[in-house]
Length: 123
Figure (cartoon, rainbow, N blue to C red):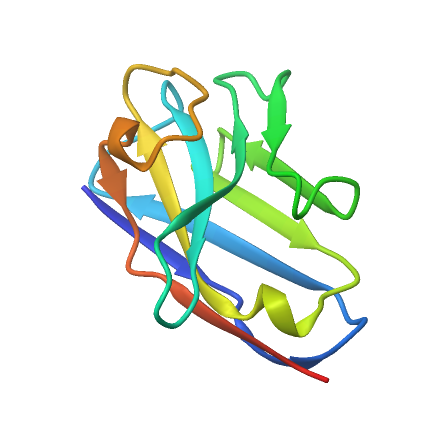
């Protein structure tokens, strides 16, 4: 199973960005999904997760109120919109899928990972 994240880039502080992730090789509509990020020299950290049907979402405090995670099971994609981006949001953003559908914020709970997409926020 291959996950591919895209949509990253260089933006200015205050801008918005939408990241997307899609899969090939298998339909992951029965998995819960998550987004994580990893800044330079930092550990990978949780950003957001969404349940099987999209009716439950959970966000890290660092992005709560300015981020929206969504999924389209028909298209086998999951997206993350982040508004009011700040330099501290600079990181490689990863999508991940959990076959046990735990809606977890733990990196270790995710089965499949995308390759990451870099988001750089300039001040």
